[in-house]
Image (cartoon, rainbow, N blue to C red; front, side):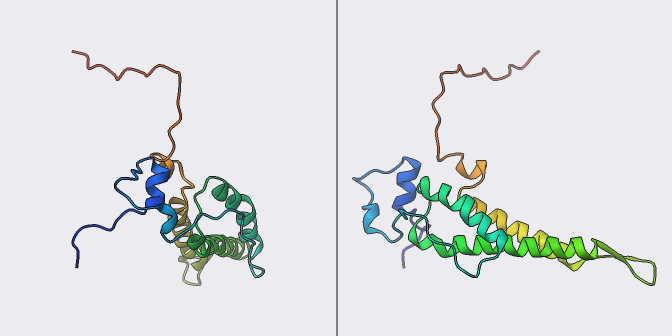
Length: 155
């Protein structure tokens, strides 16, 4: 057994710009080939999932962030949007809170589920580099603007 942390995939090193051919293997020889075309949406996907599939997946493929092994994970991401839409529909129909006979207020169970689904969606967004913080080290934009000096401490 080898100690230490897991090796970073070569494809991620290429995207990060830290790939050195003298140290690391060939990214084409590793599992997870980058997808060339946009995979078709599953037929049993709901409306909200289809919207995400049609809007977001082409962007991910265009930037080269989707490997063939990632398609099933993206499908789960799209299905989470279906579940989020179902939770929101239940809350809209029944109301967010109910007043019980005792006079106490009870939260709709779909609100709790909605919060969990939103958390799972956020995690998938990070995995697919859909947030600015996830992309922070991945893209370097060149700028001709001068750097702003750091604030000086005043005595």
